[in-house]
Length: 114
Image (cartoon, rainbow, N blue to C red; front, side, top):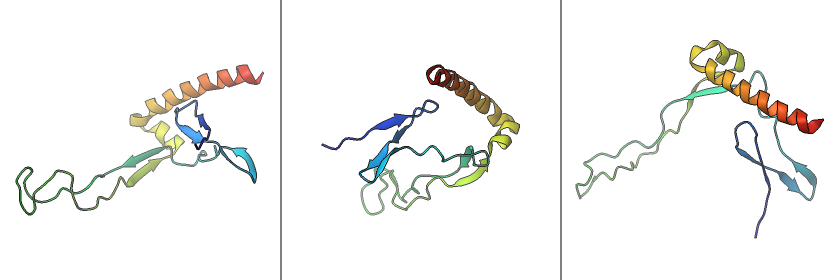
């Protein structure tokens, strides 16, 4: 049976796999974001395009509701950096809430770091 370890991010609770192999020490990449990286991503669209026809009507072109044409996903239409998000009233409260959580995480880290 395969087995691997994950580390949970104390800010978002997402898991990151601890990567290891016989050629290198176990590691986790935490370097995905910096001050100039996008912090907020605004996306549009998604899903498949509906099929033509009526739902529940048997025969050619009957619509199942799932769609048969390929969708376009959720493309990013706008991004905001930390500084831009703080200036935007729609996102400022979320950034400040994130700061509060980061302060809590920092307090716990300081307690264990000594």
